Image (cartoon, rainbow, N blue to C red; front, top):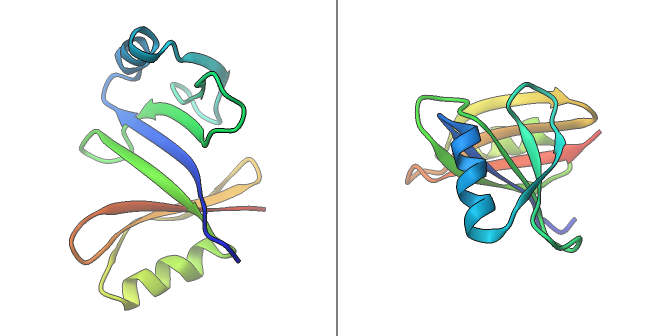
Length: 116
């Protein structure tokens, strides 16, 4: 299986201000509401691009994450841990997608996601 970047998120303490900033800078618009309050998918102006979302923080700091497509989120997180990484956000399911976040041995946070 190829492992493309399938999704990007901007997680913010103030998602409304973050959306406003990128709307003014790039002309981005809210395309739809996500699975939980304050989480929105963004229309970046091109249908070919990676899916982008802006939402509330899911830990103590603002962050920008990209998500790599995998077949099995839990197995990929476990393998990352075996390689010296750390699980930051365990595998979870929301609206037909599973996802999780790990940090590599140097602390870089990366998401993984799978349909189903």
